[in-house]
Amino acid sequence: MEPQSNQTSPLIPIAIIFGFALIALAIFFTNKDSEPVPVQSTPDSTSGDQVSDGKPRVVDATDYIYGNPNAPILMIEYSDYECPFCKQYHTTMNQIMDEYGISGKIAWVYRQFPLTQLHPNAAKISEAGLCVGNIGGNEAFWKFTNRIFEERDINAPTNVTRLPQYAIDAGVSQNDYIKCMNDERMKEAVLASAEDAFKIGARGTPYTVLVVGGQQAIINGAQPYNVVREIVQSLIDQIDGKTDVTPKTP
Image 1 (cartoon, rainbow, N blue to C red):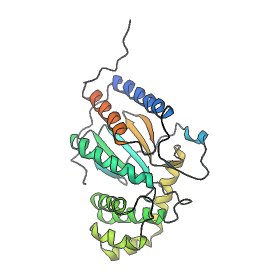
Image 2 (tube, rainbow, N blue to C red):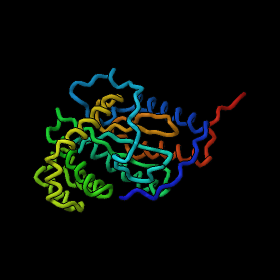
Image 3 (cartoon, rainbow, N blue to C red):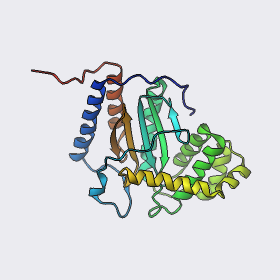
Image 4 (cartoon, rainbow, N blue to C red):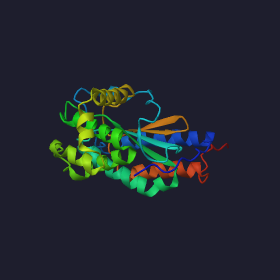
């Protein structure tokens, strides 16, 4: 689960940015005419809150990244370990990374957005994930995160008494884990991540910001694998020059 070796990001031609805008529109219109996408919403969310031009904070060394950190396509997911739709989407994203991660053209960034009004234990699990990552690094974080989603029944809460064992299995010392969980900085980090998600317009989970060449689009909810794959493949085709997205003149 470690990020692939750093690679230089290719320049993003203007045609690709244009094509990215078309993909953003495609996401919007596809969702508009289809069945509602599974998304776990905060109790006070409203439809008007979904529109935002805010941008997520820049990816940095504090983030946990699966794939090439310098990939031209970033998928920044704000997620809740207790959300049933996040469990579905986590499976989808692992499939996407299994298929496309080796190319070095896509990276998956996982950020915490616990919906504590719906899931009282979600913040504690987020703190545990950050502790595991802080102590054991990127690989340990992804082992812990995958374990949480794999072992939890889709509509059942996580057994929080097993969190220390999950941390140990990810390669972290139990003493270090307990010490970290008593550190207020982890609580502050989770809160800051949730505030960032809310600031950019997230009102439910999963909420994914797709970033290419400084442009962004939102994948809201647990979009199925075929939809996410189509989006990713289209962007990669544009980067590889296989798709002409330049407007045609009469």
